[in-house]
Length: 390
Image (cartoon, rainbow, N blue to C red; front, side):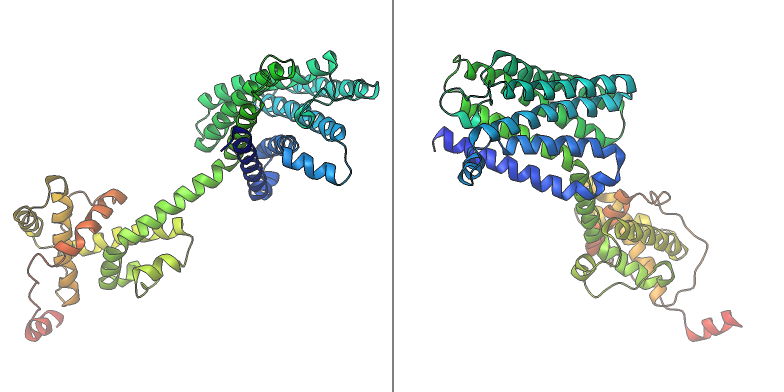
C-alpha cells in the first residue's frame, strides 16, 4: 500500500475516532466543569484535523468552497485549538492572570492572521496546497507555527507535571495521553515547517500519519473515564460469573441473607442483572460473606482439617489448599442446614473473618470439587427433635 494512501486511511480513522469520542463524552463532559475544557479543546483539534484531510478538502471544494478558504479556516481553528490547549492546562494551575494573558494573546494571534490574509498574503504556495497554510507570508507562518509549538510545549510540561501530583487515576491517564499527543503535534509542526520550505519535500504523508496518531491520543484522553467504567463493568461481570455457583448454593441454604432469589442459571444472572454490574457483584460478595458467617454455626469441630487432608490427597496445589479446605467445610455446613441439624456455637473459619473478594473467589473456584468432599451430617431423629423443642 502506498504511503500516501496509508496516511489517508490513518487520518480518516483518527477523525472518526475523534468525533465518536466527542459525541460519546459530550453529555458528561459538558455537565462537569472540570472536564468541559478538555472536551472543547479536543473539539477544536478534531475540527482542525478534519479540515487537514485531503478527502474532506476535496469534498468541500466540490460544493464550491475554494482551497484557500478551507486552509484559512483550518489555520484559524488550529491556532484556536492551540490557545484552548494553553487555557486548559493553565486552568489546571488556577492562575486567573495567566489565563487572561493567554486569552489576550490568542485573540491577537487570530486577529493578526486575519489581517495578514486580508492584506493579500493569501495565495497558496505551490502544489499540494490543500494541506498547506493559507498564506506564504513569513509573518503569517511564524504566528501559526509559534502558536502551535508554544501550546504543545506548555501542554506537555504542565500535563505531565500535574499528572504526577494528582491521585485520581482517570485524570492521571487523561493528562498523560494528552501530553504524549502534544509531543506528536510538536513533531508534526516541526516537520511541517521543514516541508513548507523545501527541507523535506516527501515527508508530508508521514506527517499525516503523525497527525493521525495525535488524533487517536486526543480521543483516548477523552475516553479514559469510559475505558475505566468498561474495565470496572467487565471485572464485576467476571466476579459475578465466578462467584455465582457458591453464592447460589449458600443463599439457597441461608435465604435470609439475600435480597432476591437466584435466577435459574448463571447466564441469566449475568445477562439480565437486577442491578448495575458493579453493584450486583458487590451485593453477591456481601451476601456470600454473610451466608458464610451464618454457616459457621453449623461447622463441625474438625471439618476444616478433614477437608484440607482430603484436598491434599486429591492433589490440590499448595496455594489452593486453604480455599479448598474452606469449600469443603462450608459445603458440609450447608448440607447440615438443609437436613435440619440444629445450630451450635459459631466456629470461625480461617481467612473468612474479613470476607475479602479474593478469598471468596478462591472458595468459589474449589466449590464444585469440594462441596461434597466431607460426609453429610446425620439428620436428628424425630424423638430428639421433639425432646429439644419441648
